[in-house]
Length: 250
Image (cartoon, rainbow, N blue to C red):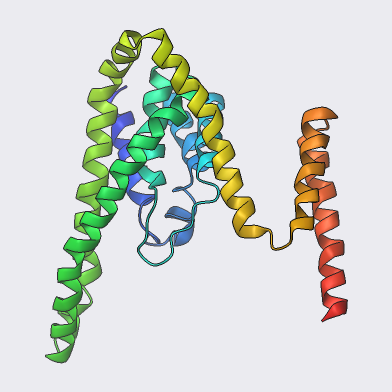
């Protein structure tokens, strides 16, 4: 991996960790490029392998598709999982299942980064309150800039170091892993996305009968081998009919 590629990936990793960027808004922040599947496409574009980048990103996205972060409760961090896990998997020619397996410890490392930044930035919040009370409004408006510096340090630097220096060592480390352990990683990588979908189903389905929709969709895709586009169109039509039914009842 070249220096420029590592810098670009680290910059995207930083932008994907904040909720809104200058001029781009949420399109250039956590809600868009912070998503693993989008990150996979962007990283694949930088490294010249968009197809595998999207495949690995989609696999990691499936794991965290049901992730909910109420308040400051962060059970998992998709930023490090995406912007460290995906590029290292690409340069190592690792499978999507293997990438999911290594994304879990990276996600836990990202949680530590989230809480460290939040704890450190609490100092700026109190400083801003004091400046507002003292009438120093110009200084108070600069607080978001100061707080973003710590975010930049915690996100940009680790991602850059991991991508630039780790790209040479990760393939060698993977080659040293015993075959049995590699199989375990691949099995876990295949199971973990199912956990993500299970969490999503738990949070979205309100009635047990709605599980029939999930079952029918699974049969259409896994058994009948229907195209995903056709299933999506049919699901959208059923959702619209259900919406009309709810409107009439209300």
